[in-house]
Image 1 (cartoon, rainbow, N blue to C red):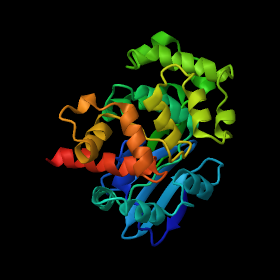
Image 2 (cartoon, rainbow, N blue to C red; image 1 turned 90 degrees about the horizontal axis):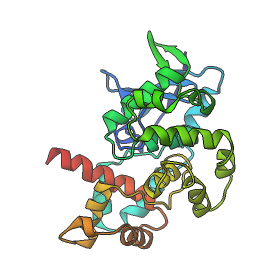
Image 3 (cartoon, rainbow, N blue to C red; image 1 turned 135 degrees about the vertical axis):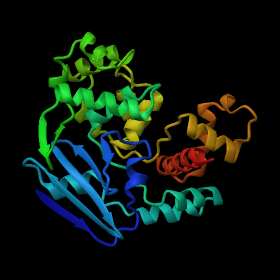
Image 4 (tube, rainbow, N blue to C red; image 1 turned 30 degrees about the vertical axis):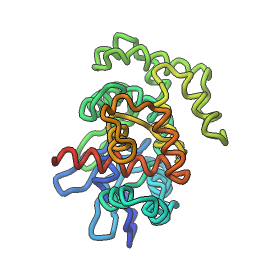
Length: 290
């Protein structure tokens, strides 16, 4: 068992980070902490005032490095918040509401498969499918008396047939996961090459070659794994909040993605992806309590 402690952390709220729609393998414990699987590590994250306590089992990988990389601890979110809060009162309010959000740097392969699964899906079901995939094709890890499973590697997942995947509840996504796994193993799309690309458009073009990866899924992968802060993933909540605040079309479904992308590019100072997360979380959570 290993520990890592961060003190005086202002921009780090567990619920804001793990419940903002960017990740699917973290679950809330009775004490308010969250436990999740990062690569080959099981980690529990607990917050006490402004102190963050990470406890886990890293299986040979540097525990501290895993945490710093995954939670992008080198980034000062105060700079983001100060810059975006000055844009307008709407962003200022949404940032105050979700002040503890951080964008995670998730494993690229896991992020690709997770967001293919997310298409036309809801978060509880996405989480359930990913757990089934991990249970059947991942590696077992024991932690705090419970059994967890790593996310399956491409090699491991290649053992699944389309029918096997369908039986895990993937529905129409079964062939997409099967084909994408094959494409990555055959290096039709090279994940290491994507990681080393300099330009967002280049990365997106490669990701769009994968079966099941459309523009929205590609942008989620770019933001939640590859730290491309200039992208602007658009779903129903993002379209709704952007229309309510800035466009004011009586029929929000008539607001097209190009219009939203252009507005985000002009307004959000190269931080469209960061602004998107604050606005998305604010709109969705306020909608739940309305």
